[in-house]
Length: 104
Figure 1: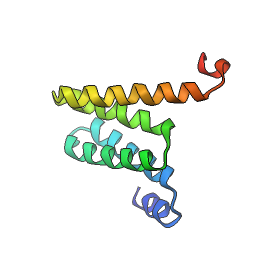
Figure 2: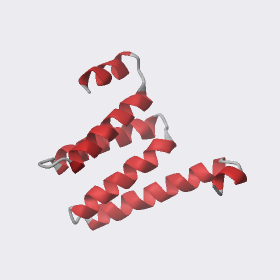
Figure 3: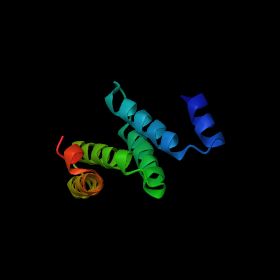
């Protein structure tokens, strides 16, 4: 993983950098003994990278995962905010798609 992260930095591949932190957070959330705080840090970083670029196709997924993480930790308001942002991101993506693709 570290080599992949180094390459994304070196080549300035912010999309892959965002995917890297998203994947690291997903792993942290599911492995036994994983740390929610580390998963949250990775997701927040991935969210900031994806939002700056912008990469809406991954941003909604990151926000959805953050919502699930916050919900699992009984941080209900934060979960609701992230879920609403995820839905808004999906809505934006669907508006930009052709009707045939959006309905699929």
